[in-house]
Every structure is written in C-alpha cells, then in structure tokens.
Image (cartoon, rainbow, N blue to C red):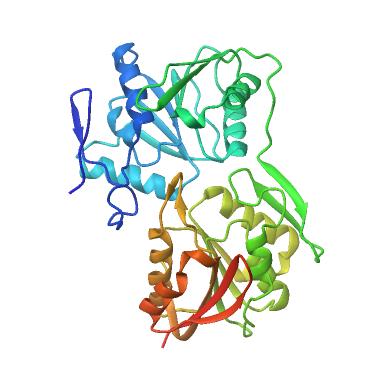
Amino acid sequence: MISPFIINDKNLFLDRFPTGQVNRSLQAWDAADEYLLNYLEQEQLTSAKHKILIFNDSFGALSCNLAQHQLYCVNDSFLSHQGIEYNFQQNGISNENLTLLTSLDDLPSDISIVLFKIPKSKTLLCYQLSQIKQQLSQEVIFIAADRAKEIHSSTLKLFENYLGTTKTSLAVKKARLVFSQLDNEKALLASSLSSWPLENTEFTINNHTNVYAREKLDIGARYFMQNLPDVAAGAQVIDLGCGNGVIGLQVLSKQPTANMLFIDESYMAIASAKLNLTKNLPSTLEQCQFQINDCLTSVEGGSVDVILCNPPFHQQTATTDHIAWQMFKDSHRVLKKGGELRIIGNRQLGYHIKLKRIFGNEKLVASNDKFVTISAIKR
C-alpha cells in the first residue's frame, strides 16, 4: 500500500502514473511539493479562493491539495495529466474547478498565483517563463520550487532574465523556493521551435522545446536509422515514443506506402512529429496518424506489423524501467503474429532479457560500444 501524503491536515493517497509500477519506493510527490504547500499555508495565501496556475505538477500533489481553488494545470506530459485525474478520483476530490492545459495552450487570464515546479529541461523552463511574462499580469504572485541541488546561480539568472527580480528561500528538506516579480521590462523571449537539417537528407527537422535532440540528431537515433527493418508495402508501422518523428520519417522516405502511427506521451513531441511530416513528406500525411497515448493503451491487439522504439529509462527526474516494460508488453499485444518489435537501447540496460521473457525470443541486429539494436518477433 502506498504511504499517505499528509500535509496541512490533509491525508491523501497519491499514485504515480501509470499505476502498478514495480518500484514502489518512487513517490508521487517530493519535498518541493511539501515546501510549496507549507509556504502557502504559512503565508495564508490560500485563505481566500484564488485562480491558481500550476506548471509541471507531475501527479497532482499540488492540485489535489488546492482543489478548492480555480485551478489550471499546465503539463507537457499526458501521463501527468492522467495521474492528476486518477489521484483526484481515488481521493474522492471533485474536479469541477480543474482545467488541464497542454504545454502549447495559451495561458488563462486573471491568474492570482503561479506555482511552478521547475522542469528538468532548461529549454522548456525558458519557454514557460517567457509565456508567463508575456501573458500574465505583473501583479501575479510567482513561486517556483525544486530540489535545492538543482537550483544554481545560473538557474536564478534565467528567472531574472525572463521574469524579473528574483530571490530564493533557505533550503528545507533539501528543497528550495524561488520568488520572482514580473518586472523585467527587457525580459528575454523564448521561441517554442528550433530547426536543423537532418544529415544526409533534404529534410529539415523542427523541434518544440521539450523534445529530445532539440539542436541535432542524437547518436542513438542516428545508429537506429542505420539498422531499421525493411518495411513491406502497405505495412502498419508504429513509431513508439516518436519524439520529433525522425524514425517514422526515415521509414516513409524509403517505403512511402507504409501506414505510420506516431505515438508519444509528450504533447510537444506529437506536435513536432506532425509538423515534420507536414513540412518534409506532405504526400504521406493521409497514411499517418499522430496520437497522444500511454504507450499503446488504446491500440487494437493484433493489428500492427512493425513497431520501432527507443524506450526511455526515466520518468521526469526518476530513473525507472517501468515504461520500457510497458512498451514491450503492449507491443507484444498489438503486433500481428509474425510482427516485429525493433528497439535500440544503451548496452547496459539489458533489454534483451526483458524481450526474451515477453516474446520468447530476441535477436541482436547490430551493436557498437554504446548501443544495441534488438529485434523480437511475435510467434
């Protein structure tokens, strides 16, 4: 049984999402959440009903505790949105005051308080701070939080450059708060998009701020692209955890009749993949679908010929292999008999063991000092 999150006379049971993760030591909240909520209580900032904008609330630790207010929760993660809704439901909390927003939505007006969990991605941090400065009133109360070891002088400089006057709190339980005023008249502006040429092609890749490999092709994708399977005409193919869609784009450039499904849990990733197909191979768009999903949850079983995947080994700041496990299990379910899952991963992650356990087979396609490409067939 998960431990309760007890704070300010509230006793909540919060799960990470997806639920049922093997590593139960990972909590759905952290010391930064506690610090933020305690500070709001001590300063009596929630004694009256407010319109609160919350950024990057991973699984609802903040929003579940502040549900009496009008809440707007901004996340780039579909899993975080799912986790927030799940934790509202399992604690019997009404979500009538809750609005979930993606990282690409406009911000609501007349916000009183901004609570900002600092994201791991510095480019996403700058983009979100730029959004806040451009779209919200200078009178808004802005409070950010993170682990103390993640808040450096360079981090505080970003808050000053994008928002204005900034100070920080003392550390409590290894967490720290950041307070900013929106008073910098010459604040920097951050664009959501970056673009770069894809080597050895005529394609230009577009990336929103929270998508991996923002400035160039990453070495894992480069190696995977060298070892992709030959796809049959008309095959049903999934680019799972697609990011900017560069793997699916490569498949379609070689087999333009393939039917591609791009899946990711990042709203910015799906937007990037769709933009890249629109810009680079517009003639294939009728054969492409773009889907926000929790791995392959909503994909019909036995319906797919090929799945291509570079599994993540972390969720936000937590190192965990549960997403890779889910991807592999889901892939086995949705593949047709004889269908192939082909993945790439760091050598030390031991994905061949997982694939052997789930599929009953695995084959090393290629390897170098850093990566392995492995194939598994559904029998």
